[in-house]
Image (tube, rainbow, N blue to C red; front, side, top):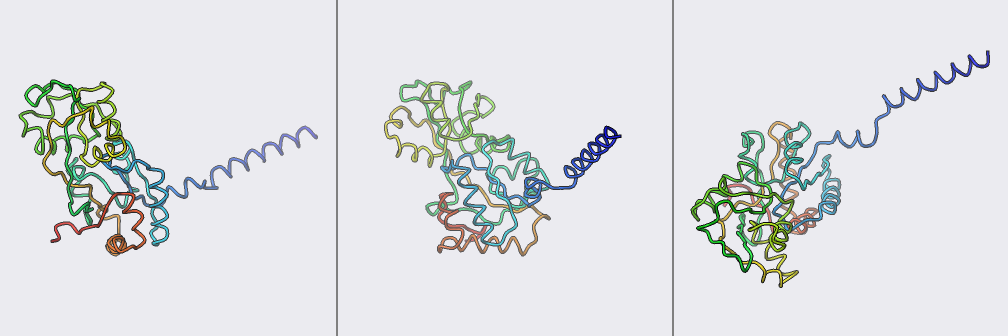
Length: 274
């Protein structure tokens, strides 16, 4: 009799445990239900993504936005999340709008301004003692941050075609950030590196001797800085406008000022605005 009661109690305890596992939501599950503000900008000087997340999450919470900020270091992770139904706002490379018809789903509503410009340039670097020229680049291994097929088309127009070559004639090694591409070049793991001028200057300020180990082979035409978008149909118009107003106020020391500082943004501009 005692043995049978023990078995019954054990059976009831097991059932209760299963019910708790099924019906009690975890804290991870609860937070994942929030709409997500995605960030992907491999050409940024900002590499402290955990610090950026903490700062932006605090800004969103204090501004009354029910959003979770999620920065990405890898393109494929960002691309997968951007295609999900959880994304609401995205700060991302302009070329991503052209990827697989994304221009219909993602709507730009603010563009960043840095030193009075909404564009930046990329520089093609080789070793200081390299014999490579623009005439013999075909087949060269080049380190650079991910751009996707749409981004490679942009680079063809802004740089490669101008120096007499196409991106498909080159071998690209993808790095998570520009500093990795530069170090791969200085360590002679690749023959060339394509990085943003801003990052090259930033790294040069930290380590001036490093600039003496590389030389510039070509400079791109101006490329658009990343864009801030909302997901069409996923965000109410009043929330888009509220986000716009809060961010625009950041240049005057508003709640978004610290976010702008971390992103190395001086101001925001409405697309196509004079």
